[in-house]
Amino acid sequence: MTLLYGLDLIGTFAFGLSGGILAIRKGMDLFGVFVLALVTAIGGGTTREVMLGNQELFIFYNSDYIIAILASALTAFIFYDKLLKINYCMLLVDAVGLGTFVCIGVSRAISVGVPLFGAVIVGLITAVVGGMLRDIIAKEMPMILVRDFYAMACLIGASIYVFLYWLGLQETAVMLISASVVIILRILAIVFHWNFIRKKSSSAESN
View (cartoon, rainbow, N blue to C red):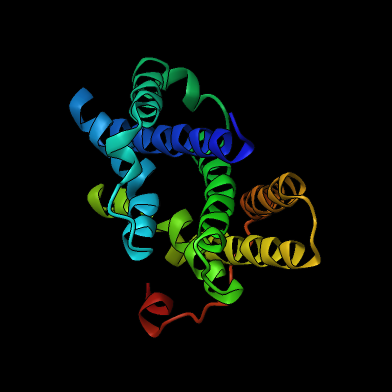
């Protein structure tokens, strides 16, 4: 198993778990938990592959992803109460998925010849689309738009990836460093309530 493949499965499980936790919090049944876990886990990667022109979507050709998603959905369903006792559980597993998916998106884009600046965008799309679909289906404001330095952590991590790649560092080191930066930034943002620049609207001021 390559590092890239291992990270992909870790990210799939982590994102699926975040989707499953949210589904249970919204009162969905076991099927709904699986559906939201599935959408969260593959939304970004599927969008990436379609954009890159790949007609053989990974979810249809590799059962490991389905197994990882099933495992994440069942983990959320069975251990939901225990998971909730871990502070910020959903946000932390989301951070792990975010860091791994950013790296996978950038690496995949570079492998098919996308220029480095474009690879940064592909990395961002891979990381955030699944979470956006999760939140929209669950009738939540997408985290990328409002919460905890979300998109900026992805952009910084993706930019670090392409910079280290440009310097010629070994791929394993590039992935580990970049993913760690995203995860650490997200955790710091959660702990210290970091947000990107925003302007308070008049309606918000009146509430």
